[in-house]
Amino acid sequence: MLILTQVAPYAEGPAGVHGVLGQATTALCELAELAGLSPSVVDDVRDLSPEQIGAGRILALFTIGETPFTEAQRAAVLDAWRGGRLGVLGVHSATDACHSWPEYGSVLGARFDGHPWTQSFAIDVVDPLHPATAHLGPTWAWHDEIYLFRALRPDAHVLLRLAEDQVDLSVAGARVPDCGFPLAWCHSEEGGRTFYTALGHFPGAWETPAYLRHLAGGLGWLQQGA
Image 1: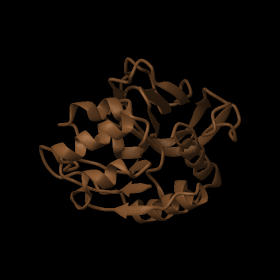
Image 2 (image 1 turned 90 degrees about the vertical axis):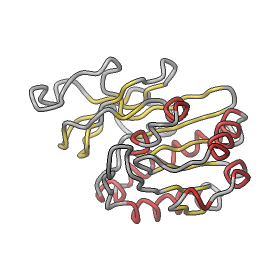
Image 3 (image 1 turned 45 degrees about the vertical axis):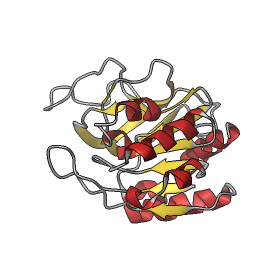
């Protein structure tokens, strides 16, 4: 399992840095080992060969900005993903990366489009049977950044969604996207599988068993397709 935690500039300037990357890396390594995978931490994608990407089985992304994948690396990701040899696990800001790579949004399932709110809120569990959500009740109380998304895949299977009447739509940048407020989803294309969760900005997430089980369930679902 390749764990990529790279902070890269946006096309127009610096990207934000997530202080939980070290904590997230430790947790993802532990989850990989529990799932029978050998974790390999990568903080610069330029250190990976296309062959290593193709053989990685799972590509976990906690990235932000224009992650500098080469054309050969991009081709390796797409080929292995669509061929069912590489599952993609996207965490939090992974949807706010690689905006210059058109297919990346399709692999992740949507594109980040702002986060007007950071607060406590209620989450509706849309699919109570999925391995990533089966341990949760009908609703889940959480504190995080609330992401907006654009270009959500029409075939994305939404697992978690912001409950109604949780946010102030009068604040700067607030709006209701066409896709509403999904917070976690999964999808597949040809043989490829992707699981994504928008949660995980704060250290408390990585210390919360329910969140770690959420990730573990997503990872398990990816392995079912391998």
